[in-house]
Length: 561
Image (cartoon, rainbow, N blue to C red; front, side, top):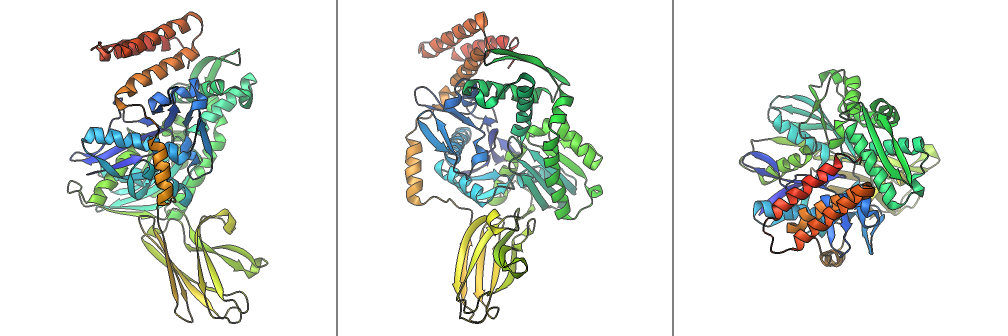
């Protein structure tokens, strides 16, 4: 049974496998490697996933969701028509679609996967990702950090030894990893990132520019008009990667919005985002204790890394031009496939030793007498420590007659425990004694799979309490069964109809952007195509799709999106 690698992205998701020729992405039902991370509910109640859903953000914003990865692990609810789902349930639809794509391409059942997550996903977000995988019918023993996956794929491709800085700017997250490669060993020296910074934020910068320029209040717009404005901002962002100036024209709130946008204006607007990018880059270099002159390459990955201002940032920081990966959208998925081969010890992969780091500091809350007896974070394993790792600290009682010590297992970089993520708690009893006389040794052991073992030993008695916190679903078997049954009852658009439905969704979006005679012509095209689909006697549906696509393309050439 095949094991697959999945890049569950904010904007797009991919599935890949290890083959005799190395890591390869697998196509979806439309023949594309990239599947937009979007879910929509059709009028007949069917769930649309991917390209068929993404165009419906404009035409059916109340029935469509995208960029829900940013809400993983939160209580946010996405309402699609009469359905209400959390981010992990929407992600489960995308994962189920990728699983089916893999099974179709490989001709066998798939039940196990390795999934990439942003390095700065905390424990709650990682467990939500595992929930999504379980709801999609996938067993996941390993989550791999996205920059680690990118570094793994790049390190395999690059025959040279050396030190590489990998900058991964995706649709919703920014990750940094520093990789040292030598003698078949790929060692991650440091990871950093911002799980709330990505291409969507640069798109929103253009949205803010258009709103200010034309006196628009985005919050006052209807769902469809807001979605259309967002789509236009996304188009402008991409176009400005290729041109110094881009024209735009669309109708919003009954008013014609038109003008041109200069790349220089866009880059000025984005300076706060660029400053946010610098912080994790500098943190990773500082944590790795490396001189930037010793870097052999700076590699850009992730779809949003195509923007010239990202390359300019690297050129200014490192006084060299970065290497833009030829397939910046694909490299993380390819890296997950390499990790699959390492996990399964595939004979086609040369012997590689891969080390990783702990992306967050792990510690506990202690009373600090220097700060009016307030509780503060006490670090036990610091961020970017090479794993596997084991560290121990000793802690003393703070009250006379104290008989219990509670260890809060925390993850994060803040001095205040309440600002960090609480992974779990352990309580241990001890003999009553004056304050400071009794003590416990607390040992944290963290492995490459993200499992954390915590041991608390009472020094005076030798009593030992041990607990294991691992990357695993937060759902009980009963909750998992109930949610799985609820999702399984939802009808998903059959795979053989996805290409037709994606074309219709794109045409409906085109109709929404047209006016007058052009709109009527697009409507006629849609009706003609739908009639052709319903006509079971037609055997030339592939040719019909081609004619429909070409007709739509002719309209697009004269219409601004």
